[in-house]
Image 1 (cartoon, rainbow, N blue to C red):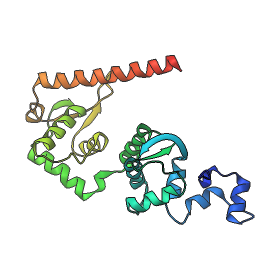
Image 2 (tube, helix red, strand yellow; image 1 turned 30 degrees about the vertical axis):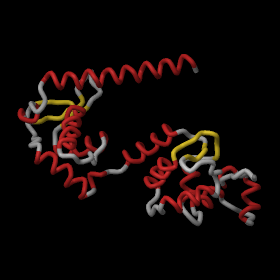
Image 3 (tube, rainbow, N blue to C red; image 1 turned 90 degrees about the vertical axis):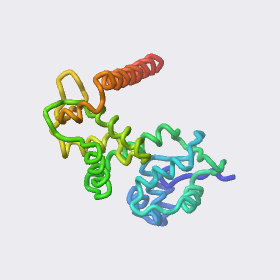
Image 4 (tube, rainbow, N blue to C red; image 1 turned 90 degrees about the horizontal axis):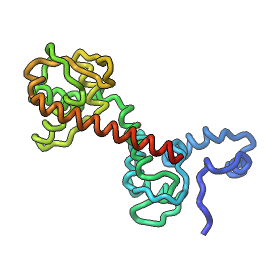
Length: 227
């Protein structure tokens, strides 16, 4: 079976021969391909490899990239023209699931949901129902995010806002600042909002956050030591 390659893997001379042009612009040709699957693959540098990555996960990343995403079956067919299909569940490429997930998170975070009426209504529904109001008490944004997630769970709805976009909405409604010695963003709320969680509950959240951050630092240190 012939090895499948993407246009981005071709040499300059090979691309000239492929396109039948004496003066091609490789990047422009890939960006202006007949469909947006090839531009998507080359945008992220996705090439055939030996690492299995979930087909659904790759399609999810594609949907964050495409302005007019095709259906998953058509997407699979197009991708299959460049990446050998060895499994019904996985593509074998040069990235793993964690790398693709990181791209998805990054692309999702870039989208400003504060401009969307749907997300505006969702956030307003939350602060109205939960009676989250401005005041004179300072509290960390991650504590307010916990309150938001707990509220959604109690109403049996999926949280529409991730950590980044939730903070964007908070900034629109509440005075905020970064307290010296703490990297977290704090917001000014009223006493009732501040008291939604007890001091003990807030401390548990803070300690869990610190533990997570310490674990990440230790993992990074170990990686650097073995590098």
